[in-house]
Image 1: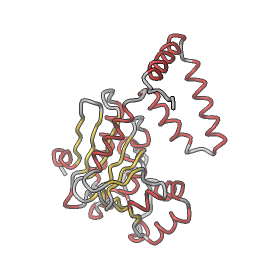
Image 2: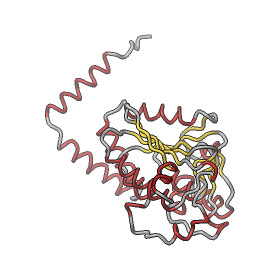
Image 3: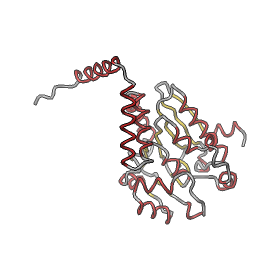
Image 4: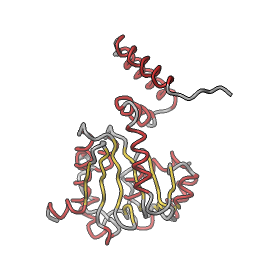
Length: 265
């Protein structure tokens, strides 16, 4: 697959506000992934993470699927690839990305597509969206985290049933289980994702990056060590603040407070 063809299958746009949109654009194949597509996605996420003009990344798919997984006609090339090559590993790059990643799930998120969704920080799903793990059906061993992440989000029993039966999880069920943040009407997924992105961008961008990092890093630890991690990073942060920083913080808070409407009854 030539480079131009691959670029057309993975579309990247940026707006003036700092939102980058990454679209898997192979709708006739339900956005199934070939090795070149996966490499381009990984490289693009890496580049957007380093781009100072980008504040939030939205990842979506064109047509009626988010991503239906790996193109099984190219399965050997994908599964026997260099698993230690972090630069071309999409999920590894998503996990390393400092910017918030919002998944706009407009249809099926199947197997590898499900794993990509799990690598997002926030998920918005259309009412008709479905999450499905077919590893056990096709004899494919998970390698992008599905066997570990799903159980931590929705509970081990639910995750075992979803993965061992290969039955789909509806968007509404995913929301009830805490897998999805918002379920919206079909056609409203990108609008809602942009709304969430804009809410993120109204805040202190340095703290947004730090907050995402401490949440995601803490999830890899037990609670005791995660609390210690938060304490250490807070101490490091405040130790690096000058008196001028504290004065600016106080002025900002005072300005915000003065704009609030009266609370008198």
